[in-house]
Length: 270
Image 1 (tube, one colour):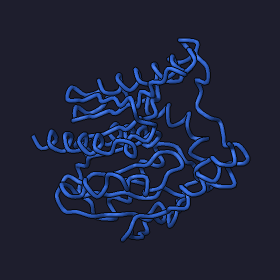
Image 2 (cartoon, one colour; image 1 turned 60 degrees about the vertical axis):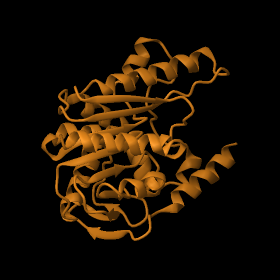
Image 3 (cartoon, helix red, strand yellow; image 1 turned 135 degrees about the horizontal axis):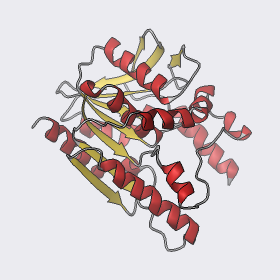
Image 4 (cartoon, one colour; image 1 turned 180 degrees about the vertical axis):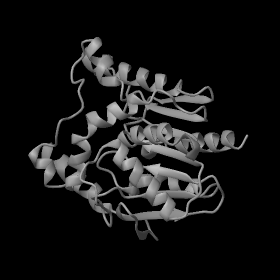
């Protein structure tokens, strides 16, 4: 099973870029990105841990029909390199902001983040609220989950402290850096209490499965509850669940993600 999983990760990591991707140098490093469409606001996609821009392929073509879209590879994936050694949320947010500025994209933006990318986009909105018109979080990593998990005496509460040796064969050092930066990222997100009152959609994969043990079920219920709480950061918000979805909601039910982005874009224009 581990070998199969390793091969899958290798395939995912090797996909690298979307068609017609571009390459640019910023004051933070070099980055590969994809930019299409003209109608503003621009929708900015941030991938999850270990994923490159191709993870957005199921939704990006449809989104660019109604809005400008921007996706990129974080440092370590094809064509992207950072001069920064640390790989925590604030570093990545600043790299992305510099990249958007260098590529001449005009704020305010619609931020879309998956998994750990959701934590990065939450932090972006908190750090630079005037740059953001709306946010979509897809099965996001919740910075408040670990402490609540411990309070409820559940298992596996802490974020990973590093990659197993076999995983280092398939992923660039930057991915391990993001894992090592997990706790710092959580502290940075929790350190800014105010989230801008902008349209916010949070999508959660409930993973309902009768075969789950009691511990797994309670952990999943808490994970979904933390997503619901994230949706309350703004007065204008939607909380959307998908019982049949895996962690990759944008692959399993792309229409849910597209509709959520459409809703946020429309609300941001009101």
